[in-house]
Image (cartoon, rainbow, N blue to C red; front, side):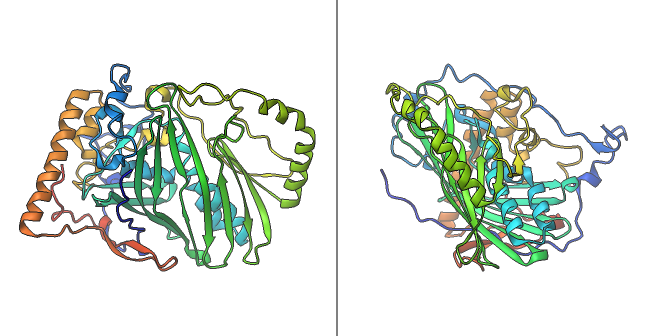
Length: 463
């Protein structure tokens, strides 16, 4: 295993744009024939992709990956067969799929009630990864992505701020200034023979302006099993600690590893504690399904009763064989979480579209992320992911063009890096700058503002 590169614990900043912005929704009010292609004047976002995903059956995964055991995959040019038609900047935008949980937290007067919805948001942020075995495209240095959701009350901007190590910074804010959510991700991917492990280094920061609160946390580890042989399946594991820097309250969430017999697959369990360390609420559920909260005494009483009545079944499970060595078989798991009486439902995942398995297992929200709405191309930055020709070609089912464009863009990026080295010029980020997070003190990426002013004349030609 090679040594780790330096990790920049980077997040984005705290100030919103105060700009005279132009919305592509304004630009899209009329099409070429002067009509709005929608119902009730609202653009109807797509519910499918232009083409289904292609078959990977003819590609020898082992022939490529056997050279990569123990290596960090972000340093290796991957064949396009591994990809899904999204940039990593679009993948991290999926954190916003359940933004209503933040809006709900903003309305609550009790800090522990707010914390439980922040915890539900942190769990929901990884839900879209369930069964997502395709790798997003590595963003090019200087690439950006914006998402405007006026009907859901927020907007978001992200930028690839570093290439080695690869760091993606993002900043989201509510349109009425209720919250800001920002952070950065340094995705470290390593191949261990039968599985690929993803460590999403970086800190998430959520600020609720009305309550003058700031929360920080890191995301769990992710592992994709059976990349060589057998059915691909995903698990999330590790401890996520959410800190309220204003009150000293904490929420400790344990994303449980599968274990030998799969009993804990997808399970999340934890608690909210006051600054005094007294437990105030228990959180439980599955990151693939739902999250509940409950009083600690009720939860512990239920656990004791369950343990008392479940001894025989536990003994039976211990006598079972763990299976063969050829593949990490995904356990047969009942997906439904049993609700304990007295629990409060915080979040439940939305059903995926019926064609999801033919569309890279995308959610309804994900299906819309690379869509070019009418009028958008002339408003968004020329560095936006939606304008990447390799991703667009793959989405349209043209794999040969996608592969050629991917190689062209990667070589263009290498050539630009050589030119900068020749001129002894440093890369300059456009929308984010390095600084320090005011809550953790860690190295940070601060959003500078100005993106939604729509002044893009000095942006680099990355595509």
